[in-house]
Image (cartoon, rainbow, N blue to C red; front, side, top):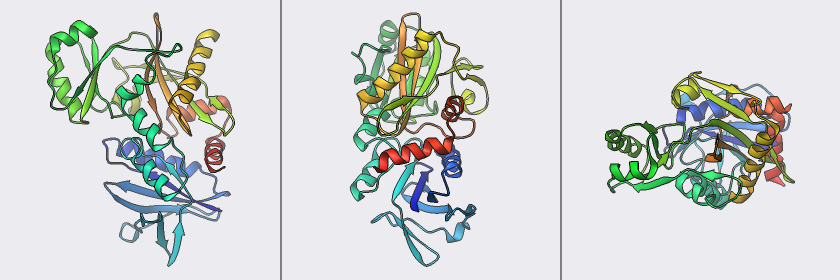
Length: 335
C-alpha cells in the first residue's frame, strides 16, 4: 500500500481553514489502497499528527510524541520504523501550498503530488499574473485593474477615473477574502490599500463587475479535462466575503440555474483555462456572468475540501464520491 502524506496547515491567515480541508480529505482517502499520514506544516515545522494504515482506524498522536518530518527524504520515524512518503496530497491554502514553494520542494526530491507544477502554482497564486495569461483569450473577459506594490503610493482620484466605483482592492496573493475590501468612496481607498498590504506585498484594485457569481471545478483523469457541475453563489452579505464563505451567509446553488448555453460556456471556459495555464490535479475557476459576458475572477489550485465546501457539492451532483475523485487525481499523477 502506498504511503500518502496529506499536508495541511499553512503559513497564511487561511491555516485554520486548511486544517479542516486536510482532515476531511484524509478521512475520504481510500484506506484500502493507501496508508494515510496527516502532516501539519506551519512555519517550517512539519509533524505527523495522525495516521490511518492497513485499512484501520484513524490514530491521533499525542502532541508530545508527534514525529517531525525529515525533509531530506520526506519521511518520518514512527514506532521505531521509517516511513517514507511516496505521494503528497497538498491541502495547504495559501503559502507554501498554493504559491509553488511546497510543489518545488516535492519536485526537487522526486515525490509526486496532487497539485500543479511549482511554476504554474506561482503564476496562478498571484491574481495579477494569472489574469495576464488570460487577458486576450476569446472565451473569458478580465475586469480592468491597477497593480500596486508595497512602497508605492495609491492615486485615489486616478483609480476612480480608471476603474469607477465601487471597486475591489485585494492582495494579489491571498485567499478566503482576507485583506479584501469593497470600496464605494474615494476616501476609503487608502485604508483599503493598508488592509490589503497586511496580507501581502502587492495588490490589485479591480473594477466591480455586476452579475451572477459562478464557480466550476476541473480535474484531469490522465486522459482528459473533466468539468464538474457549475454552482451559483448568492451571498446574503453584500459580496462573497469571509462571513459568507465560512459562516453560512450564502446560498450555494448546485446545479446553477443556468440556460444550456451559459452552462456550457462556463464549463468550456473552465476547461480552456485549465489547459491555458497548464494546470494539473483539481482546480476551481471563479467567474462573474454579466450582461457583457463571462468575467474571470480567480483560479484556486487548492480549493476548499470540507463536507460543506463547493467541490464536494459539485462531485455529489455529478454522482462522484469524494473517495473516487481523490483516487482519480492520485492515479493521474502517479502514472
